[in-house]
Length: 440
Image (cartoon, rainbow, N blue to C red; front, side):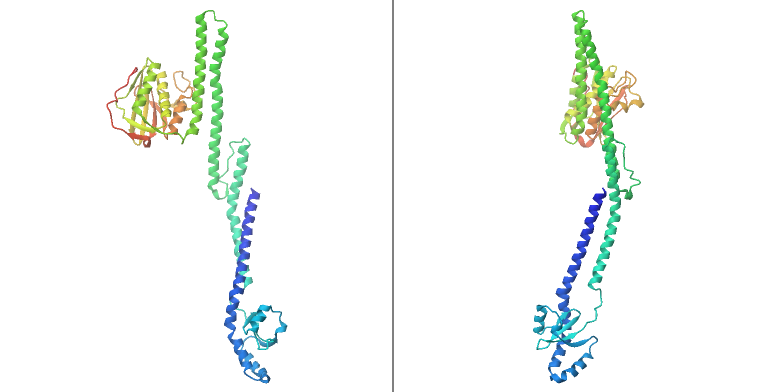
């Protein structure tokens, strides 16, 4: 990180120095190419009048006239020879053409013979900064800019260094490593954003580890049953005993298959969020399909739809909603005494799908636990076994909603899925909201 800062800062310094040199070059070129000609034109009157006045008198009187002319100038005026100056051919050609030339700090004009020159100067300095002063001024400005850039970059570099160190620690396995953004210079948002990312990453990794441990634990039970049944198979004395033990193996294998299927669905839900195609789904139709399925699986349970349910059509993940509501219905049927009721309603910007049963219910302290994967509650009659309710919660979250559990008017538990009303498509109320009982 230090090398990155040095490279960046040295690059800025080089740019400032180049800008300084370019500015000096431009200033010098403008002075040479434009200002000198302006000065020559402004000062050409005096030298030309002096030359004309000298040429107007005989050669023997020129010394006295020149002395009189010198008294009228506040700077030196003298007669000299061109050979005394190492002028370029450009300057000599201009003098030969009768032009007034600024050379050094003096103005020159040539007499007709080309050898004698009239020199006016050195001229007094003009008011204002010289080229050197201008360059020094720009240099001071650029130096202050370089210092200011270093001060402004310091908090950025400090936090980037902290990010680098924390990222290295996390990569080394220290998932709890964080940036102390309170001590970081400047309190930039990058530290908070990185810490938020690190916390989410740690949570996901911890959840994956816990899920892996839970899966390994859940797999042991059906595998042990299969192994035990296989060992007992050899000791079976009758065909009936053999069939019972084969049925036990088949049941354990089915349990494994269900576990793996739900686990795959649970893991894949995260990757599908935002990419799932939404389709129209009528809640009334969904209820009818589910009751036909589960009334066969649980013939002792009276399934029905609350007559007060609204006719609602959603645009959502059809298969996901079928699985979520189906899991709630299956869960309710397992623990109900003899009755399960489904309800659909819309109010306060939410679409609510509720499943009630008249079972033992769930205590308030356990209501959050039931949606965690592989959570087993202490009471045998309570819910929380497997991934069913965890899947319901993930599906609800993927649709922008949530799932909760409370007390049911039937005396047991009420599980309800709340979805944002944006997924609802209002539909005309029909007469098909009568209770659907088992077998319908």
